[in-house]
Length: 93
Image 1 (cartoon, one colour):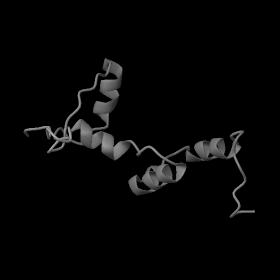
Image 2 (cartoon, helix red, strand yellow):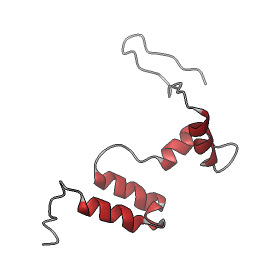
Image 3 (cartoon, helix red, strand yellow):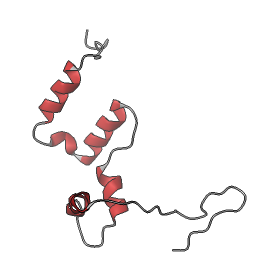
Image 4 (tube, helix red, strand yellow):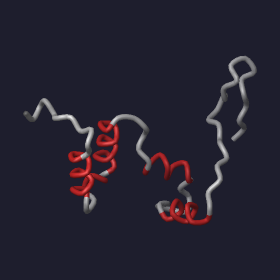
């Protein structure tokens, strides 16, 4: 695919690509997430890595991707509930 920058806005007219550098261990971890040889690393990242944002967006991602059903999720939930800056949930009081 040809990627061209718009001379007026500096933005791509098609989806732009970025080059990143991974050490061997990180590359192998990412590669193991691929579900098929044809799946791109971009597809893997979009499927596995939640968008940045609030805890609500993370939870929505987890539910959509089924990661909310993984073992030991209770450990993460307890850590979230027990963090020092946690505020009481007004909806459960």
